[in-house]
Length: 243
View 1 (cartoon, rainbow, N blue to C red):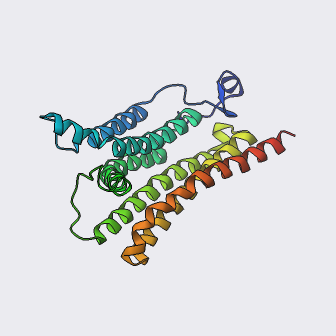
View 2 (view 1 turned 180 degrees about the vertical axis):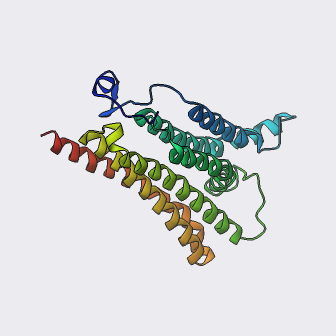
View 3 (view 1 turned 90 degrees about the horizontal axis):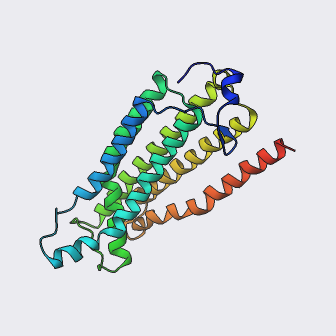
């Protein structure tokens, strides 16, 4: 929905985290995005060697669960971010539709380096007990995977930021109040921070010698600190606004 909201319509909407939920109806675009994300999860599963044919095959398959769980968590997080955007604003015009379709397109490509990164990390952390499921013929292969993963991660975060920028441009038609505007800017800042982290990791992998470049993935450990910090900054802004 991209029509102008009336005061009467807005007054009837549920509120979550200070934002009125304008996406009260599931659109065909949202259904398509949900199906695409479900397909991305399916690719994670069928990307293995198929159904185990013996007990040893089953144990080997189960050793891939940690990498699958981590990949599933990332995909779920991206899906949830898009779903939250849809629920909050219900904005569906030509620009947001295009951004959403690109978002899905990148996800379907991103799913492969995503699984490879977490599979390789599980193999490294377990000293080989959790197998990678793929073969690297050169130590620099891992650096290339980090670059592809970082760029894909940055693009996904950047597209989410663009969706929220589009919302701010539609402030008048959506009748965003000051709290909703702050929440929207929070999402822009956080997604840009996510994207910058992905780019920083990719640059690290490219610029550093191989023995140091393999630690590019550890830059993402900044996020459990930076994301809560930014959340707190914007919560304080809202508290200050509300007096």
